[in-house]
Image (tube, rainbow, N blue to C red; front, side, top):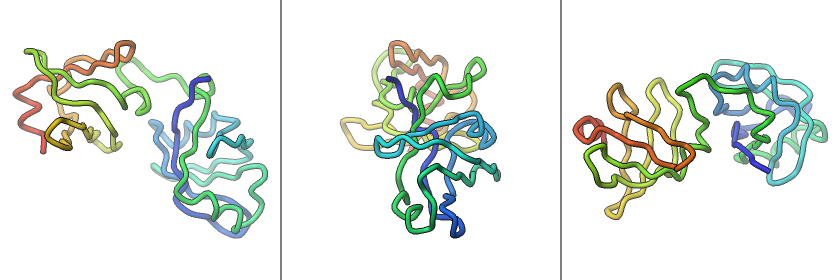
Length: 164
């Protein structure tokens, strides 16, 4: 089965077992379409989702009080890929980008994507032989994304301008 990480539990919310989560989908509203999730390999039915910006408040079957919710703090929430909403052309799930090799359009390799931080302009973190590099996915940096072959092609000049 193919899973995607859709959120991370930040903290318990209230006394009835609800949790506040950081959502990794395009919108916290998208989380409402997912009916079951997996946390540390355990399956939970989603009872309710209240979207609030990039966060959401989620009620899960089997998590009935604050103590049970506290045990989920910091854990990733996964969902089956087929349960996740389809993305528009040119948009990708973070899980699909992680592990991609980043190459220059002129030849050569920049590194491998270890994480993507969602933001107005997403921040990619790469592992390179010289250590970690981060770059903003600003206009003109990424020229092609090939999820099937796990390759992201970048413009070397623009990449050098926005990487740290």
